Length: 172
Image (cartoon, rainbow, N blue to C red; front, side):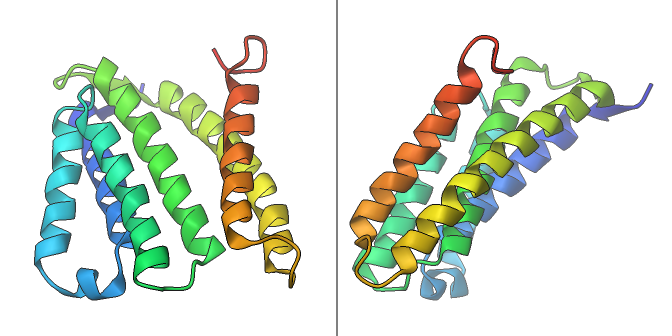
């Protein structure tokens, strides 16, 4: 039976979290050394303690960074970047949840990871199915203001999460 070591899984938690933070930052900040190192450190803390508040902290800092990048620094919000950040944060959160329940010296069976990947794939596909129509509507002139599109997108994400977590819906 094939197995993946828990430390490899935690390395993936670190990589997803760090990448999400870096993608959300303004390009000027990524060019320096300080912010990428800070992103790597916060990502490392989430991998080292996936059951702690570091996971939520990384995710909140990522969303705030993206909002600052688009609203304060004036970079045009891209639906591809928003979808990438959302996907990375979802994968990071889900991987940290698995890592929090697996002891460090343990090995994770590949069959468990295959089932997990299937669920992640369904959630990401549903997210794309919600994101693309909202993006198409938001891109049409004078149809939906950007602020309303963000609210609709967040509502769509919450709706998908609700549907997937209902008993009998493949959730719990």
